[in-house]
Length: 298
Image (cartoon, rainbow, N blue to C red):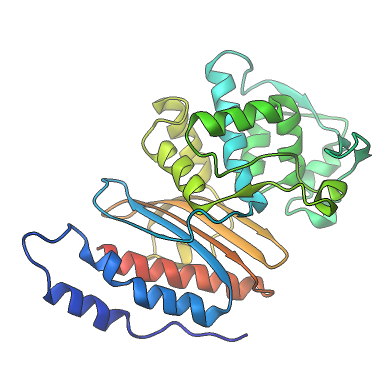
């Protein structure tokens, strides 16, 4: 269904600014912009969750932040964090080579399944089956071009239970990582990786604050997230040149983006969407919500 961004944000912000007083919160515009953002969401016809927090803690705003959504590729964020945790603990080396294979056990009954290059966002790794790539190379592919094959290889190396344990340790229990990607039998039985906007906000904030593993590891992970190649969601709603470290996720009628935005007033923003068939429309919706929150938080 076509939709358009409401043009009421300016008047809402102006009214809010006019009512400001010395006792007002540092960024009263964020709450003041809520009606306009909710109108944008309503006009889209999608189910949308939003979690927003300034990194200095001065302001936050949430919409359906604790509602579970299919995680799509946002579940690759905790995989990345667990990789660096194990590296920091000396359990593996990022330069360690891993054999490239394309056969994985289903969560349902352990029977093997394969991934199809045509269904992935990256195909070169499929041509490397039988060869090796380092764990660091696989992490780069998993995040920057959202390689599903790289993700499943890393999950097998790290252990799914270890990944979920790290999610719990970081206080992001709204993220449930049950399995690798493209497990058709598990999907048919509803055994999916899920997340809430608040859980992703927690993970991204830990990265931004240098508390995911340690400060050095967090900086390295943020640098990878900054090299993300799919930038039609949150980055598209920001002024050109704004530094953004983020991870997207997309499957049929689902599109997400979770970001650390290094604006003059840095913030973390997570937007989850469900129900729009055209990815271009859902990306534009994410960009529109981003634009509204950015304007309100300046």
